[in-house]
Amino acid sequence: MSAFLLYIARSGLYLGVFYAFYLLVMRRTTFFRLNRIALLAGSSMCVLLPLLRVRTAPLTGIVAGQLSITGVGEAAAAESTAGAFNWPVLLSTLYIIGIVAVIGYTILSALRLHRQVAGGMRTRIHDYKTVILSENLPSFTFGKTIYIGRKDLEENPAIFAHETMHVKYRHYLDLFLFRLIQVVWWWNPLVWIMRTELGLLHEYEADEGVIDQGINATQYQLLLVRKAVGEQRFSLASGFQHAQLKNRISMMLKPSSHGWMRLSYLALIPLMAVLVYACNPSKNNKAKQAADEAETVAPATEAPASTYKVTVSDMPQADETSIPFSEVEVKPTFQGDDPNAFAVWVNSQLVYPEAAVEAGTQGRMVLSFVVDTDGSVTDVQILRGLSPELDAEALRVLNSCTEKWTPGMQDGKPVKVTYTMPIVFKLK
Image (tube, rainbow, N blue to C red; front, side, top):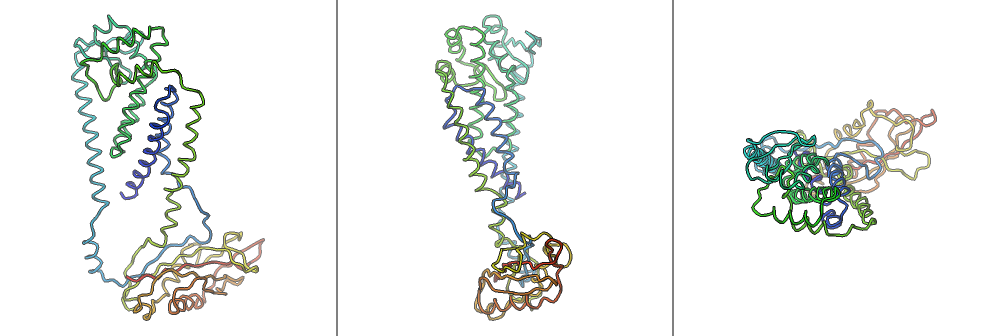
C-alpha cells in the first residue's frame, strides 16, 4: 500500500503543477477546444508519468542486493516495532475514507438527479435523445440525453441548441474522466477547482457553438440573464446554467486570443521534465540505497549490536591493464549468474571489530578489486577508508576470497575486470 500511496502523491503533485499552470496562463484564452484537449491529455499524462521509471544516472557494475545482519534479539525487535506509529496504515485509512465519501456523494447526486427527472417524457428531437420535463427545472444534459422543460423547448430554442452542443462535443466523456480523477485524487484541492473550470470551459464551447449557428448574441446573452435566477444545478451534468453567468458573457464579448498564446503550452515541457527528474524513483532509489535496510537476525556472537550493508558496483579505475565492468563484453560472475552472490559472500564473512563497536565507529567505506583472468580476486585497495579496524576487516575479507570467479571476456579472451565495492558499517 505504501508504494500505491507514493504513486498517488507523485501523480497528485504532477496534476497540481499542471492545473496551476493552466489557471495562471491559459484560463482566460479563447482557445476552448485546445484548452479542453490540453486538460484531458495533460491530466492523463500526469496520471501515467509516475509509472515511468526514467534512469537519471548510468547504472554500472553489479546490481547487488543490500544485506544486513543485526544482533538485536527478536523480543527487542518486536518491542521496537510495536512502539512505532504506523503512518502508512493511518494514511491508507484516511485515503480510503476520502474515496468512499466522494463515491457516496456521487451516488447521492445521481439519485437526486434521477428523482427530479423520473416523470419526464422520453422522445427524440433532431436525432438527440430528449427527456421533456413537466416541472420548471433547468435544462441540462446527462450523458447523451438532453433534459429540458416543456416551456423552454417551446419558447426558447436557443436553450435546446445549447444542450445539443454538449452532446455534440461529447462533454459527458470529460465529466466522467474528471469524476474518476476526483475519486482517486480527492485530497488535491486543485482537482476540485479544475472540475469547476472544466464545466465553465464546456459552457464557453457550447455558447460559441450556439452563436456560430446564427443565433443573435445579444438576445442569447439576455436569455442567459433571464434564466439565471432560481435555477437548480446538478454536479454530474452539463447544464444551461451550470457555470458562472458573468464569466460566460464576458468570454462571449472578449476578442479572440492571439494565436501565439498557443505556444504557451510548450513551457510545460521543461517544467514537467524538471518535475519528473526531481521525483524520479530510479534516481531516488539509487540515492537512498545506503539508507534502506533488509534486516535479518544473526547470532549475537558475531556482531553484538551491528549492521552490515554490502553492495557491489563498478567504477572505472586508472589501471590500464583492466577493463571496467561496464565496458567488458562478457561480465564476470561469482557462484553462477546471480549478481548478488559476491555481496552475499562478503556479508557472510564480515565481523564487526570489537574496537570499532566500543568506539562507536560507523559509516561508509569504498574498496576496489580486480577479477583476474584466472578468476582470482587481486589488487584489493581502499579508495575511501573509515577507520583502521574497519578498513583492515574489509581488506581481510576480500583478500581471503579463494573461490574463483568466472572471468570476464573481451574479444573472446579472458581479461581483467575492475570493480568498486562500497561497504556500510552501521551500529544499532
